[in-house]
Image (cartoon, rainbow, N blue to C red; front, side, top):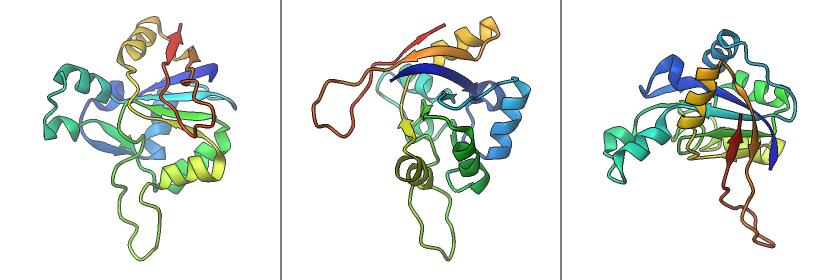
Length: 171
């Protein structure tokens, strides 16, 4: 994978407090930062969770593992925005991009990870999880930028369905 990417720095707006991010929250950040997302973009969500893991040196506490923001996968406005935006990948530095487990949808049968269902199965939008984005997010912020070139080659595994990547952001 290679293409234009956009960083949305959620940590800069909400800190590392555990919270679920709705479309409304995300759109406020996008507007405040004057971020433009175009069809074909890779959208990266920096929550600070990757840095929490690095700082824990493999000894993360349950409190640390429950920190930082994640998307509300059940938010229909968020799902609609993903569809309309034309983005090709949604990448985050947390466990699942969306809150895990998702908030209950009482009285309805539904996916445990609704954003995964929406992105992967309905749209073919890639999801990237547990990417370390902190240094890149801070560098972009110091330059007053949100856009960069993302190169993320997969391992060469003929016939494989998924693969870890080794992402590189070029500013």
